[in-house]
Amino acid sequence: MGKGNIRRALAAGLLVLLGPLCGTAAARAEPPAEIVVEDSAGVLDRNRLIPAVESLDFYEPTRVAIFTYRGSAEDNLNEEVLRFARAEHPEWISGDGQKWADGLFIFALDPVGRHVGTYMGEDRKVSVEEREDIQNASKDLLRDAQWTDGTIAGIRRGAELINQPWYRSSAFLATAWSAGAAAVLGAATWLLVRWRTRTDSRKELARGDASYANVSMDLQVTELNAETIPESSRYGSTVLEKHRTFLNKYNAATALSNQAHELTPRAMSRRPNLKLIQSFADAAAELDALDDVIADTNALLNRGSAWAYAWDRQLAPFRSDLAALEQMLGKRHAEGDSATAAALRSFRDQSHREIERWSAELADGSIAPETALDRLRDARTHLSELLKDHADTVIAGFAKNAREADLMRDEMESAQAGSKAKYGRAYEPSILGTVYPSYYFFSVPTFNAGFNTGVSSVASARGGDGSTTGYGSSGGSFSGSGSSSSF
Image 1 (cartoon, rainbow, N blue to C red):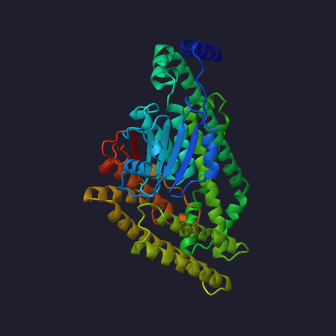
Image 2: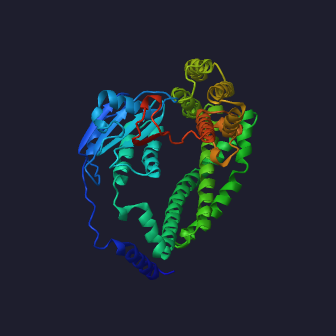
């Protein structure tokens, strides 16, 4: 399909879509009639929240109420919102006490129990599916503890859906599309895929070129570094084994580079060619990392002028793990108050002191570079064991039965082994990362990956994100439109 044909198809399709709208009055833009913030949980930034909500446009004048509450996973947020409204804001409830007041939209959040809820007056209520849509609009941000931004996102989606004109509804748009936009959809999708593929190809080519240039520029230096690595060292000998295939891999990367650079812009829009370019970029990046490891191995084992910088680069992955421990232990369901968490914190504090001691002894010659690497390997191995112990604690705390425990354990073990596509393990550009396989050390990022996926898998199996309706035992006959769900 030529570009002229594509443009004609798009124009024709736009006429199909816009035809029914001709003569239809534009929807009104109404800022919130009132904004009430009851931040009982103390998690919202009013200085950002209120201006952001004030800038939103509703289709009808709407009072916006925002309520936060510190509860628990077992709480019914609907019940808590109703209890608060009856005690503090009776004007949120209709005169007969059975519904939410007309013109009202309540957005509720429990950051501790991890619930989000939406409630509307009878003249503002939306369908169950749209209610879930509003809540879902906030969840990615709320899961990341971005309470203010998540609240804004949810209210923004509410403004888009509450009293939405018929001609802007999903049902109408779906009907309009099915009536005559198939050609447009196909053309637009084709254009979008090709544009996205071409953009990705250019980015990957730039990534590959940067790494390939670094490797090419340092090629002679890399060979000189390899010549002086002591082969008698068990670390040096393993790195040298990697180096023996270096030139072959470089020649292969050169061939891929030539193929990638022969592609025309049009050819770069095709998925098979994107995969070719990605192969070049990955190969060049691996070589770029390996030549740094060869240089570090030579500098550290021979105590060259750059040995201190080389040693710091070996410590970097371990230091990164130690720095990330507290955030990991602070997550929901992470059992941060457990004995295994205390063991991790104690190990972290001790390791900071050990790192300083190893570095000082390496500097004054009290220990050999190999001894320092041995100690670093042992420390990272110990951390791996402590993380495995803590994984058992987390599984025991979250899983309610053996099936759930097995599901979580499988995800944690898969994360460590990198045995599933979603846990692809990147090459660690260090001496230890080169000498030992990627699954040898259990790091904090891989623990987090397995933990997050394990919790999500179990929650999905339980139906943990399902919507909760009803207002609990204290709600009585109250039947206002609203629901809550977990995030």
